[in-house]
Image (cartoon, rainbow over all chains, first blue to last red; front, side):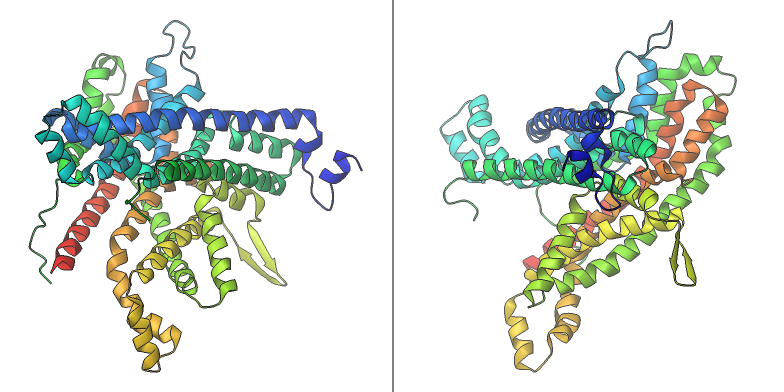
Length: 239
Length: 273
């Protein structure tokens, strides 16, 4: 049996398994979804940590701004956020002479999703930093440890460990949020699938295929954070 | 219960984000309109504020659709979620694993993908024999969101039930109460209070997700904002109109968040007694 026979068994028609055009669209969709996910994870985790540190130790203005940033992006629809970035700010930075796009849609998707999840990550790291035992800080003060040492030897290591479970949840949310890029026509998984089913009328098949890909991606993220949690676990803390 | 005592907790984000959030929300329109677009706005034929007020009735109509869809989905999701949560405490292993699979599946599937599955893979009329049940786009949004909310609520119920001392189950068994009655009369009432804050968190998150309904042809606030922009044909209005709609969502979600934090703080005090 060749691939096409298997792919069209029953009433199903998994075109992307045998049709090279559909396959390349589908693979490109997976590539974009992974690309957006990975870039957003890197950006939102580092910005989240930095934001939480400034929220805990920054000046009053910094705390005020970061608090406002978190409230704003947590409490507004991500769809409008991505529209604002792409259509609104994208128009501002577009080439004035011929209105051509300077920053591509996929970059705006990365920016929008990163900022949305950063708001949640700041909150996760903040809770973890607040949960650091006071005794450690007092001990550091009594040893007159310099501020940078306190930061890198106490706050960051313990903050990262404490925040990992909720950051893991946020990263699952992140992978799911990449589908918002569909709204600005980034050819990620959902957009690619919708184009395939528009041509081949195999909506159900594409839904199952998408579900499978998202489950694998989310499973990978969960596996990574859980492994990291186990590797970083401190004896005497947690379960 | 002492409701009026304010808790002595470390400064929370509510206190930090509170002023910033409110002022940001209120001043967003002004802040974004004047400095960035002052010059363009003067060149524009229709001043921005006039355009906003012209489109306000239509946008408000769309916003009401968003609120209605979110409320209906939340109601459906809560009822189904509480039932699933009750089943997840069942002694039957098969029941538990079915509920577990349901929650894992529906919590992890992107909302947009589930909505598309309902919108494009399911018919708009379901025929059962001679009976034809209409399944319009609005119902599809409500059901697809409701199923996701149910998965989240089921997890909340499971967690809240696990936090009730198991001695209570045993005491009820000793009194001859059946498992379901124990759950309904003894366990669930205690869980309601504990679940209120995270439940409102779920409400806020799904409320901000509802505008994706505009992608499957529902005329909500975001869809009308797009129509308004096309009708005006003035690119300087893009940021003002979307920001305008954004602040409405912010107002509702932020109020929910504030209420959640207040409830949490109150329970914090009560549990310390």
